[in-house]
Image 1 (cartoon, helix red, strand yellow):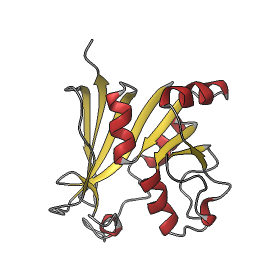
Image 2 (cartoon, helix red, strand yellow):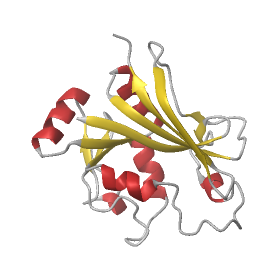
Image 3 (cartoon, helix red, strand yellow):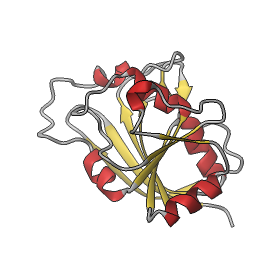
Image 4 (tube, helix red, strand yellow):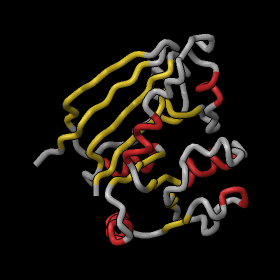
Length: 187
């Protein structure tokens, strides 16, 4: 199964404030910019995946947003939340996510058995785990033009250096930038 990342960070590499807040994503950059309907590639990315795997903290952040059905950005793809401590999702995410505790490799086998071919991986700890298992093949990082100074970093401890290749970078009218890489793991 192919596993890809699409995530936003501050310019200094944080995915959230120390408390887990992401409100800065909505105020960073030129909020008056005419984006011409450009969603920075998110819709195209969502069209390329058929399931999503996220961490518990990511799920809790999404749950705290209390999104309406019209605001729900993930369509109807299956979403699996990795957690060894939480067995039931928050009330407002029931029916939208499934909790999972176990081996990541077993999860991928199960998802492949259900016909999934490409997974969207989200959440800093989860992304780091998948990289350490050599499972991520593509990563898209959208940088918001803001320095947080501290917070939750995108990457945790990477066990061995990972070479990124096939760089593609673009900028947007709102002063956000985006870089896409393929990942080449050491042999």
